[in-house]
Amino acid sequence: MISSDVIRGYNDTFLLSLLAQGDSYGYDLSRQIRELTDDAYIIKETTMYSAFTRLKKKGYITSYPGTVTQGKKRTYYSITEKGKNYLKEKRQEWRITKEVVDKLVGGDNK
Amino acid sequence: MISSDVIRGYNDTFLLSLLAQGDSYGYDLSRQIRELTDDAYIIKETTMYSAFTRLKKKGYITSYPGTVTQGKKRTYYSITEKGKNYLKEKRQEWRITKEVVDKLVGGDNK
DNA sequence: CTGAGTACAACGACAGATGAAGTACTTTTT
DNA sequence: AAAAAGTACTTCATCTGTCGTTGTACTCAG
Image (cartoon, rainbow over the protein chains, first blue to last red):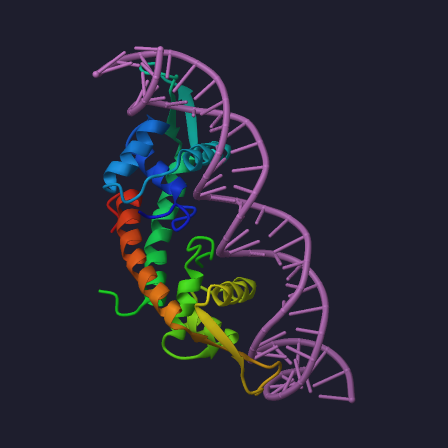
């Protein structure tokens, strides 16, 4: 199980990437992450909610109250144009990061 | 230019990976990193030297004074067996991390 | 009525990265 | 001969994202 610390700073990008496919709320996004990675990565609740705060402050997402279906009321999140641009940059950055780390971690890793 | 924060936690692995090819000293290792990545990643001095302290404390490297050739005296570093095992684990981890992030950053990134 | 699941929030602690500054000696440039 | 640039390392305080703990609040299955 990959630690969140390993991919530090990319949690924001994960959330934005999922939100780019449609509005959603915290609990569901964390479930999506877990399922997409076959339990290889499970985002911590605290990590996720502090990410939302950060993303909102930066203007990358907006939030609105959702319909209460189960338990506590949901908060839905929506990606903004600014958020989409940031996501684009991050996707580009990830491509370069991969190459850089591959070279340096090296060891003929097949 | 990739920030060290992006690949947080992997600086230790970079240094170990280079030391696995032979003993070296700080300044030279930082130069190797810069050249290997074509200036795409330049490790900060403070980041590197604090990494050495950490790696020594964990028993992944040992150090010994080198011959003074230019300026201040060099400190050479050597990877230990424990360090080699850690490096192996990290290389494995990186392979998984790449897959996980690829899935989550997604967006048909070509 | 108890426990598991859904859904979120506040708080303090931690660790790696960073910026700024300093030490010390050598080589190159002006 | 003085200044600047390069080599090589150190100390210290600060920042930021993550993590652990705890708490709130409601629903549903047994």
